[in-house]
Image (tube, rainbow, N blue to C red; front, top):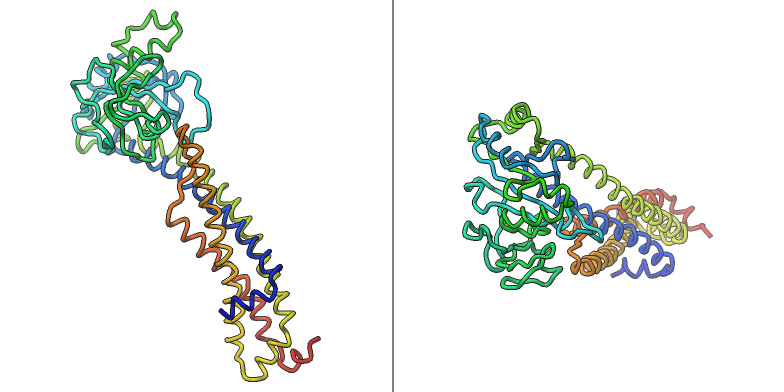
Length: 391
């Protein structure tokens, strides 16, 4: 308590110093939470692509993603490549014709797939929070399983009706949150997605396509022991009109960009925090100047230099701790408010983890203590007689 009382001697200056630390920690928590969300999405993508190869039309592919139609005959050609075990086609298109708002990650999508088409090879686990997932019996029907974000945005539950691109679908299930792309998906049987995709195309293009013969991507599962990168190169050589995406490709194209963005976000927060640390140094230096006679008395009656340094460093660390806790609370409130406002649109931009929270407070406390160390060391070296004469 005496350390708190000591800080109370200079209420205005201490308050302003704590405010500087608070703003720095607030920035660190907010930007760190945004970085956590980005990393979660990237990690989800890395996990998804780790054990498979995703194919798309080479003419319209960007970073492995394409909405250009492919013939299902391509799947037959790919199956003939040595090392290919299973090929499963899918159709992806935007949920909204005119997407609006900010989306962290992929936008809301309609995903048509063949239930069980992976023959048990898919390792990216997902489970139903309500109802069930798609099964083989759903083929040819208008049913859908919604990701958690889409279900929340449209307030849909198992048994409700969901309109997708002007067509009504019965909601048979809602997925558990994954913090990755499936949260933004409305999964439907492949045939239903094929029909929706053709309807979304200009009439001059659609009239030349047969809905039951198209896909926008295909997933390839290799045979046991086959190197994925080698297989991807083999597929590109034998089926040159497709583009491939492997786990390494995803990490290279998406992960590197994410690393740069994370560095920028954390860098901005650290700059704010360093400014707060400088204010701690200033406050402690002025405090020591004002308490020179007090320090001289302590030294004259036998107070050791170590004790003086300890007292002043603890005061500085306490300033950092208080500022860190206040910054954490303020940052957490901002994160929760922003996420709550975005839930209705499925836009969750932040993820505050216990690690981020603890790290922010510890960092603020250590920064405060370090900022007070050098002024404290100077104070401990004061000559007791000279300090007692200080006016």
